[in-house]
Amino acid sequence: MPGRLNGKHCLVTAAGQGIGRAAALAYAAEGATVLATDRDAGKLADLAAHGIATQALDVLDDAAVKSAIAAHGPFDVVFNCAGFVHQNDVLSCTDADWDFAFALNVRAQWKVMQAALPGMLGKGGGAIVNMASAAGSVKGVANRFVYGATKAAVVGMTKSVAADYVARGIRCNCVCPGTVDTPSLGERIAANARAAGGLEAARAAFVGRQAMGRLATPEEIAALVVYLSAPESAFVTAQAIVIDGGWTN
Image (cartoon, rainbow, N blue to C red; front, side, top):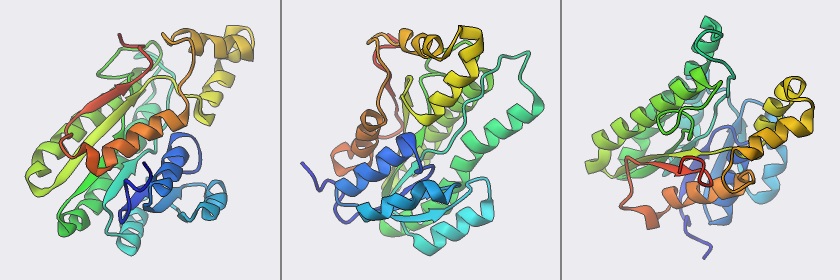
């Protein structure tokens, strides 16, 4: 039933494509007032047609994060979606890989929460949804060393925030997807194409590791994000919810 987020003010990072975009659209369809942000403002342009406010925002810029949230908040819901998937193992991971992965996948989520939480507390509550992954604390995945490390950190960070603020009306959960058919995955497929024997073979390898024999759609992940943001999940907090088509079964 539409309208589950009527009257709610929602912030989405990395809303230019993939899961972030799907979540922004799903929030709007449920009646929310949405601020969709992305480093690339051009990817946000057509969201205005759906009644979604947009702003260019690099979540690695602490001052910009504070400014955007101060200008557009307070928010009832925050979906921390920005991230990057490195392909490496413990030997090939560089200092630059490590620093960037933790800066974007973990620290940026912290800074968004740190900026948004006071406003949520002032409103008497709110819901935070962080992007984690089935790769990390849930499942060890080959060639995902630093990515898995960052996503395990997101799970721990999420549970800590949930424990600290549960008595003050804040819920904090994270979603742990399997392989999702997004532009980000397309980049990894292209990067693996030569070693796999072509684009189709590289894509087939990603599909083949999914128990259902297909990739998830961004909209399927967004549906879970909406649930965790809506009043119907009022008794759900501190959870890392796996949505991976049976990959970790």
